[in-house]
Length: 71
Image 1 (cartoon, one colour):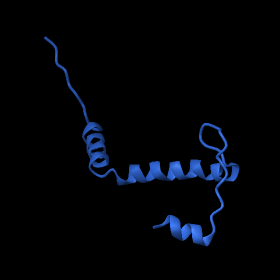
Image 2: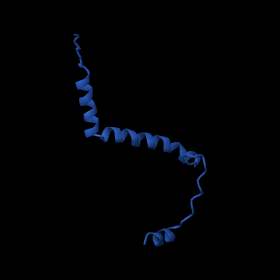
Image 3: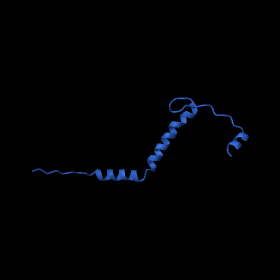
Image 4: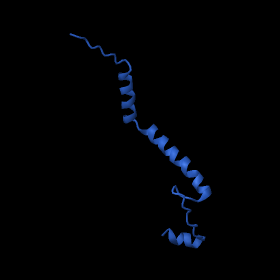
């Protein structure tokens, strides 16, 4: 006959930490949002999308056209 002894000293705290992350996803979602913003910022300087394709030039809109477009 043999005996198995399980020492799970780290498991309960790891499970609590995992549960806390699932119950409060705001920090993880914030980190994802910050990462997306940081990756997008350089694209405005180069006017290119994530696929490397340049953006189309913005159309010129004067104040009158802007007011009419907002109706």
